[in-house]
Image (tube, rainbow, N blue to C red; front, side, top):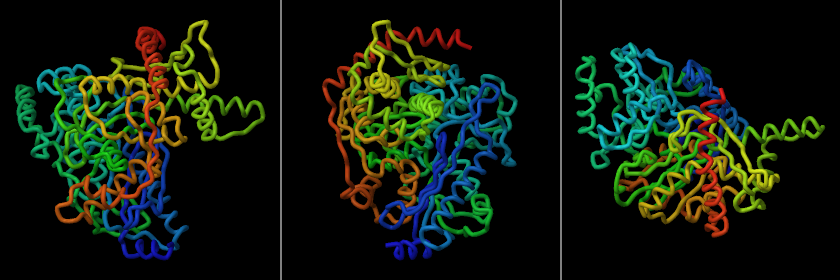
Length: 531
């Protein structure tokens, strides 16, 4: 097996996916059978500077180089060869955000990530103007808020992109973007697989009196669907990624995508009536629609699959951060008692304990809002644990409430889709929330009221999904759709674990949610008074 993989790598027939997540940059190399054969990663964190969540461009490139170097080292260690080129490569990243550049390629303002909730005025104005929900984290909301703020750099913008679009541009010289990622910048016309021209014209009219030297389309990237080539690795790009000089230029890259699109690919959830939930630092549900929603909902984003099909997206800024914080606290406790333990097993213990907790969590309520949460109407967050005097506080109940809280804001949006009678044949979970057996699936099934499946590849997540999109762009059969490619050539025979919703779990989650919604004024008070 290793000899065959070695040959695939030496001949440049492997596919590479790199994803810049919120806390980890990961590179995954796959073979011709789409199975992962090597990986490398880099841990990083956003910074809160001058009231904004950001990452520096130096941190972007230092992280990418480290992740790639670790991948290359993994290849050398496992197969005794150097990684010099691939059949195709793709870059994905956290969707949305704001990266404006001038005509010389200089960044005009610090990168404003999806996590920022400072664009409420712009988002509301554009939603009303377009009659289409524009969430606060979308690139157009950031741009328009900068316009409303009168920020001096706006007149100098010549290119506006996202993190994935920026990295792809630097590697290839191409100012392009996959349609799924583009749908988090500005509304998409799914029939034309391009930005909605009528809305672009509306926006140009909205700011026409300000006499900017640009039109909106001039500064946006070119939109491309999955399956096409989106440029080739340049010599300068190869050196950016691999300063050692080993990586060669000249191989193709597919369109850059967002973490939502790679999650859909990684869970085979790109066909209508399918959906997936990605649960890690943030959590979002993507449901591919067979018909439009009846009206605009501020809680629901309308985005697309990497092939351009319309998708209802419920995106929440907060998911597992509070779980991780409590696991770190328990780790310190154990260390103080002379019992050393890693955080991973502590998290596993919390997930196992949650299964034996009371169905409603025993009367405790928990808000996991480290940052603002637009779905819940919060512009800032304060993690908050509260209980009544008669609440039954135990490790099992506490753990169950932690798992509920990680999905609670998501459930507010899922309930809207349920009322809209959106059909779901299958819902697939991926990300850290589902790594422990059973618990995460059971909680999501209770929240969604639908069967939840997890594949063995769920832990690979977005980087693997990006590698699949790279493989699709390089080797798809003539005329084969993305959903057909994934069904017939990637996921056929893939082992799947499915858990049906349990009525008692669902009733318990609903009881927790009633308490959660009723006590929300306490969370708002914490945001206002806990400084």
